[in-house]
Image 1 (cartoon, each protein chain N blue to C red):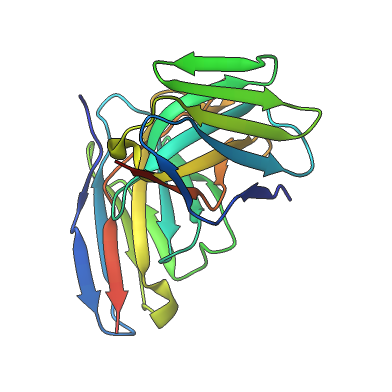
Image 2 (cartoon, rainbow over the protein chains, first blue to last red):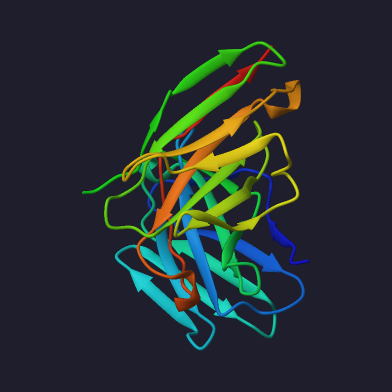
Length: 113
Length: 117
């Protein structure tokens, strides 16, 4: 089965810097990879989706890359703000199981003012 | 912006009791899901539901669990006889189109926290 690994340690950065979060997966490369944000006690909120034939996707201060050779996605937040502090989840679609989403454990980001 | 609403936000129950968690998905969405998240752990898939029947379920979704869409708006998760290990946040989610489109972007509710004593 597919395993998704995200750095379980919290990432602490200074406001204004770029945060880079990593998502590694085993086995097959998914057709789609998604990133969600989760605040404490809340449900995940969709941020970005990247397709296997896309190397990079941007949305405002967010950038996602997808390297199917390395089986890795990187999630970048530029000019980070304290409001960006949250847990960020990587999710893959499982194509032969109703396209259900499988989530990584998430990486907690703390942006200090 | 349309949202998925869940009730109750928090439920405390005794072990062995039945619990029903309720969800109102986004009105024009076709696929509905339940996920759970034990404190400090991953968000885990439980079940997906389409056209009034279960389309996929995980190993977690055993005979103690059931889902129902009793009317045109509500989507419920029932746990027949709760166990201590059922304590978790339960998230309902919905998707506007067929997952066969591949992307399967989900809109999640805020969750129902279940505490089993």
